Length: 490
Ligand code: F6P
Image: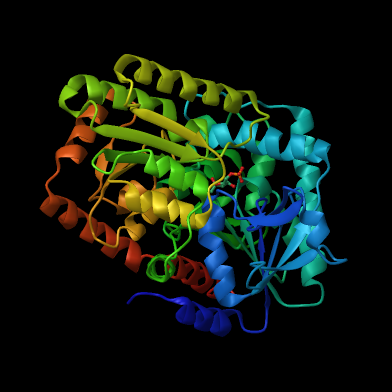
């Protein structure tokens, strides 16, 4: 059975009944910005938003998140709320405001300079700064206060998202033990040897054990989490049930839920047609139609393996010179977390890698590597996917990676080749992609060649399988499975 909006609505209605449904995350689904003196809204580049926005649209509820846009305050009511999507309001977004000091310690500091590198293990060393930790705790409390005021006097189902809010579940449960609380961790969970170096590891784990249900993308991350709990805390880990018993009988179920996308919604969007920005049209028009186009679309993040990917394309052009002048690699994506040194460095590395390949192989009328950094709208993303003969997703480590699933969903002609890192959660489901080890430049370059020379029949055979999997395991199924698992605990 293929899940859709209606079925999800039904499940939520049946299982949650009259309880208020609240989603909490750091990143908001719509950001208002000032552009040329006018207020505009954007959808941020985030897997979390890609996945949860269609779900909230389908079943309403309230989303609480940090208001980070330059024009966010101008459009909300006196309770900091606004109905979204702004062009077709369906659910409530409640914005929470952070000072620069809070954003610095909590978001840039503890979330993205401690937890992010620690969970991804891509050889970028996490920092452990007491002040960041203190601010992380304060900001988690601020989110908890917002949730508690939102659910006051009502039955509630609270769904916490991600590593920015590890302490929130316990803070909510302390005040509202009757509320059902779940959390989904959108990034990997490391093995206990990595996690044990964190000076505040026990507090983090206790925070997460405030959940009735703790979700990760894959079983491996669930097992890593259970092992970390087992090694650090005086609790009972029940492997059979995949759960943790603590605090006089309370239980936290730990389950894998591989996140996905709105496959059907994308098909409809493509049928309706969409308007592409002039900037993107210019970029795509500059690439001759007969040129093979491979594309990458990522937030500019060191976990995504972008310099490695560009160096691999260089090696491919060297090993298979017959493709020189006939192949272009276009890397697109928004800048991210640029205040952190590791993110400044990765942009430098991307520029250097592209410059190196272009210098070595480029000619007066052919630039093999193009890098375009800016925010890309959803219609532009679809246009890019449709033009890309090959999509390269070569993360060094990734919880899931929804670019891979969106590329598959966009290939309505059932052609196109997905080259996918083995170290993404998506690789567990998308076995018909060309799976690569992004650290192994020689085999990675050979696999790019495999993608380039693949026969049309083979492309269709693989793409059909990929599309079946993504279509069946869509975002509505993901959300329904979480709601059903949680409701069983009520
Ligand atoms: O795919 C989910 C994710 O990795 C989140 O964990 C994160 O919030 C997001 O993508 C993008 O990062 P940010 O919110 O820092 O822009």
